[in-house]
Length: 110
Image 1 (spheres, rainbow, N blue to C red):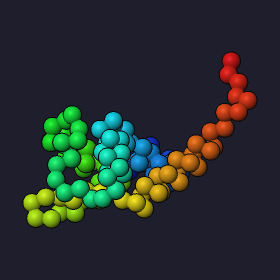
Image 2: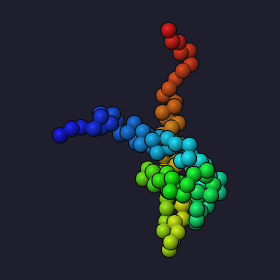
Image 3: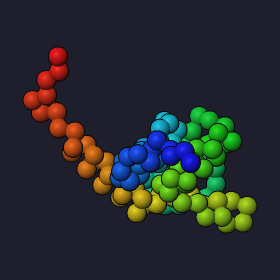
Image 4: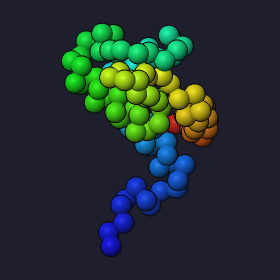
């Protein structure tokens, strides 16, 4: 049995990595920003807000949904998308804790 190399790291780092990977494209960051700005679920075509094709936007939405950062609820032929507040709060907490560990005061290199 081959152990995935990510399994060699603690669960906090694995979780943070998964969330950061989901945000690893400017389109996904723009989707998150847009959903945060409108503060409601959007029914319809988010691709109207991005300079990308509908298919490409749907692929980015899928990645954000897999990470749990957004929620999508089917309503007939349309999907309502909104932020997942609990997962966004978790992301903020993880990010703050991780960045707090990266102490660079009085850091000297070479």
